[in-house]
Every structure is written in structure tokens, then in C-alpha cells.
Length: 161
Image (cartoon, rainbow, N blue to C red; front, top):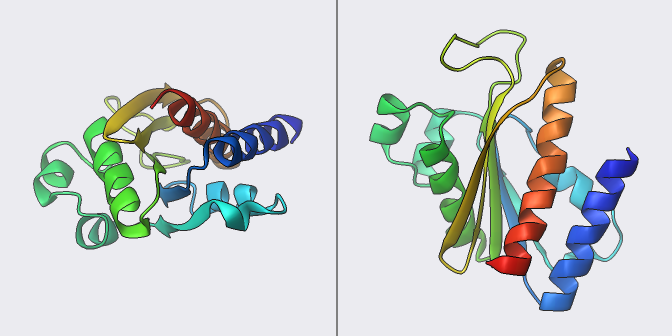
């Protein structure tokens, strides 16, 4: 809990200082990243919103992920995460957009894409940083680790992007 609060506070301070806005495209986290951000008072000055794109239809029809990415590479892929982040930036008209897509389990994993596989992508000013993670733990622990790492990546791209 302390690590989450620190990540949210650090991100909020960074965005305020740089005058940047923020948005998310969330899949496996189902709104948890957004929820963690709005737990801090005063975020309305920079937080624009989020798209919870749990289904592939929403990824394709709302965020603009090409159907070929989903069919050829899967919704849990670096490419899908990047399209999700770019789509969130476009739709929400925000400077920094972060997406998270993955397999939280307990089912759904394969040898190629195991439970705990998560791709987080951050976008700012035409620049992407996408990171592949394999988190350990149960469904909630995987989702919590995804939230913390999404917030950290958002701050990183806001500073360097």
C-alpha cells in the first residue's frame, strides 16, 4: 500500500510540475490504475480519464487497435499495448497515456503467454516505452503489481518523453 501511494504521489507531483495531462487504457486492471490516481486530492487538474477495454471489441472499436494485431499477436502483446496507449491519448486528449494488458489468471495462461504476463505501454509526445513483465502471485497480486508499475512508467515517460 505504501509503494502504491508513493507511486501515485510521485506521478501527481511530476505531472503538476510539468503541466501535463494523463489518461489510461486499462484491460486486466479494470480501472484500478485510475482508481489509485483519483484517491489523491487535486488530480482533476491533470487526470482526464480512462477507457476500460476489457473486451477485444472495445480495444478495436474504441481505442483503434487493428483487428490484425489482436488476431495475429493477441490482446496480450506489446503491439496491442502501444495501440491502446496511443488510442487513449487520442480519445482523452491527454499528454501522457498509459495502457496495461495481460493475463491475471488464474486461468488463461499458455506456455507462450503464462499467467502473470503483462505489457504496459506509456506514450508521450510521439514516444512510446513498452515493458514486458512476468508477475508472480494470485490474480489480485498480479493486478496490484501492474498498477504500481503502470504509475511508475507514466512518471518515467512524463520526465523523459
